[in-house]
Length: 368
Image 1 (cartoon, helix red, strand yellow):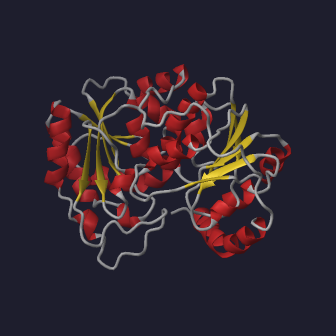
Image 2 (tube, one colour):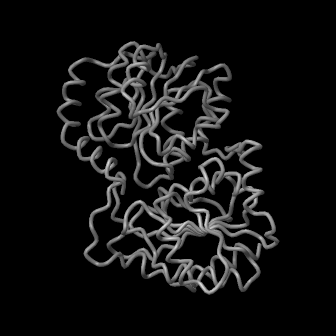
Image 3 (tube, helix red, strand yellow):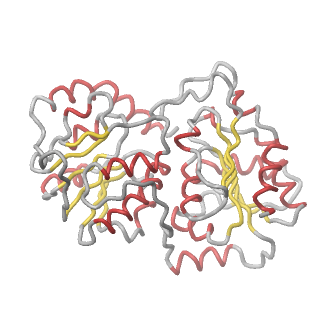
């Protein structure tokens, strides 16, 4: 995991609780009487965290546009997940959660509502508490609900996309009570599509993308097994493409060196939006429990996902076009609120997933 992210989490754990105590000394702004909801015209959405959380928030932002057609939506997010929002037609303006100037700027703006979509950490709640003239909305976890005018119950067992929907449902007038699926969610730009077409020039085989990376070691799968999967895909007439950021370059080189077949390695070469353009031409995505997995799901790509420490009920894709591989060992899932303890068993929940398991699931989806 990125060192700055690790440091930020440590700071949150140490200074978050006492700062939350200070923030709760002042009563949050009252909201409309019970049974009433709001129809705000100017909303700030706070979304720290990784790519996956941001991607699964997009359906709620689209639904927000439908429930309140004239609403102006601004997002305060981190650089690592900014790409999810950067070309979204459901977002009017983006601010940097880690830029002091942007933090000062948003606090000077008037929002009728501020929705903190962070699930458990404190710093976003402390920030939200500064918007005294706004109705504050957030998840009722770890005592954070004392700051919000509208606190919504959070479940570790519910699909995260639906958790975000419930957060908005509790505050927005005209919100659908049922889980929703209303693609498309991503709209790659023409120049992004042209870049992908150039990279794929001369490729005649159907594309299968593979994301082998993970934010933590416990979620990774052995490189030699990824190599075996790519060899099988090639033998079946598909073109394997390795995806990831700059952090996955070393991993991709290892897989390429071990695989006895031609691979395309796009790690570090595509932005998130450009990856969405690639997904428009992709038959299948095979991935660990990752943000790229959720980007693929919302791009309409069938997926095979490998789960171990993570909560499959919460983060596993839903629907018949998605297969989750999860051995469900007694010790897993062990992740809670995004934190995974060091594994004394060598991440057996991941190594128990065999190459044949992945090949079988892959063949089933590609056979459709």
